Image 1 (tube, rainbow, N blue to C red):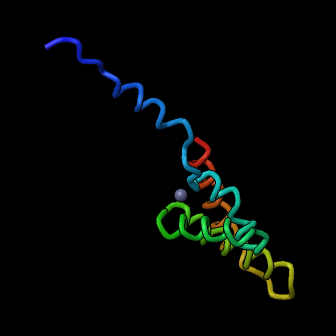
Image 2 (image 1 turned 90 degrees about the vertical axis):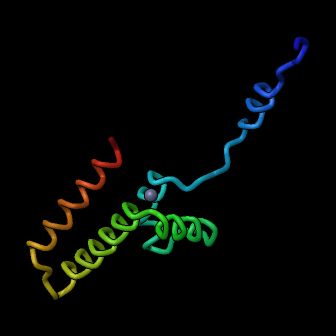
Length: 102
Ligand SMILES: [Zn+2]
């Protein structure tokens, strides 16, 4: 058996020219505040929301940011947020950011 041309390798290389746009963890985490503030377009909102549904770490980050927002809001008003809670949230937030940036 000879003369068989192997063209499968070429076809495979051509297929990966354009990668589909996937919402990754970095983008999700970077845009969580935009998402929380409702400053995001409906398409992006859907993408972030569906990523949060599938990704545990990002959902945790989202919940932390949401909690932080509430704490910050409270500390600006008449009601004083417990310092301990705020410190815990800030520390956790920093940890999550460090994990992702590594
Ligand atoms: Zn994620």
